[in-house]
Length: 130
Image (cartoon, rainbow, N blue to C red):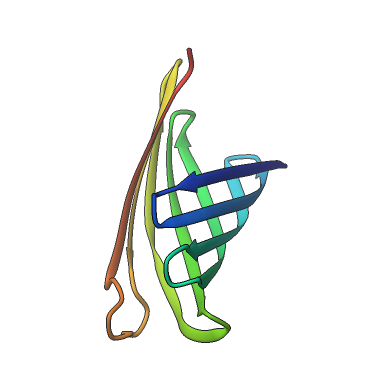
């Protein structure tokens, strides 16, 4: 298990993000659950936005450095105490690893449609060991 914490200030907005990261390997399979909570406070309008985002994935390592996963991302958006949206995304994730790096690409289409929200989430992560 791991915990990730990020704080940010954007001039007119302050933000806090926390992520609980859990993963379990079983043979060639890897299972992951991440729970992300994001709070943003608009300084000028004194508004709050809260995003609660559970993430689930199951991946299979075809080779020690190559895995293909199915990933789910949910997003519950609450704006000033009112539920604004609940979005669900599901799709494939490809992960490649080397001796000193890893790279992941996720392509997740939205399940259903929610006006004003992204129809796709495409994410690329790169990690490097120094």
